[in-house]
Amino acid sequence: MKKNNPILYFIIIAALLIFSLPLAGCAGTGKTASTTAAETTVVATTAGTAGAKNEITIEGNSFKPDSLTIKVGDTVTWINKDSYNHTVKAKTGEFDSGNMASGAKFSFTFDKEGTYDYICSIHTFMTGKIVVTK
Image 1: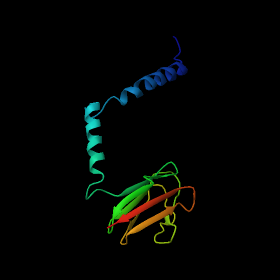
Image 2 (image 1 turned 135 degrees about the vertical axis):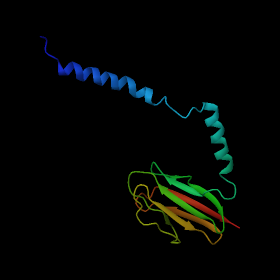
Image 3 (image 1 turned 90 degrees about the horizontal axis):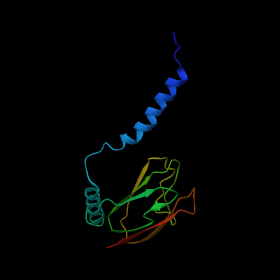
Image 4 (image 1 turned 90 degrees about the vertical axis):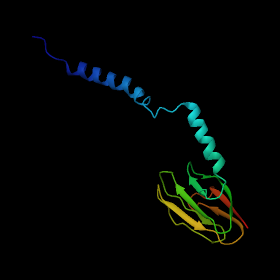
């Protein structure tokens, strides 16, 4: 009687996994590329309208966007999407998030017109600006 070879079984299972993983990405929502493009356009055109979220992501050691214009009374939220700590600190002291771990959010409501330059005090090359208008 022939003995089973465990290495051969391992190779067969590994090959099945390697070839089946790319197929897992094919199962989707059924949307076409044109549907996705249309949805992206809708998001882009509503981003500057009233009621839109004033969010800045912290990602790749940068603030995205690095400049944002808002109205007096608007709130801006920064979201740390990097895997390490950052801060959001106004250069003139109006706000300071303290250390923000990965996934943390910090919000500040701007009640005065003006330009607010800010930095990450951990990575001082990271800079941003909020312009507040009436």
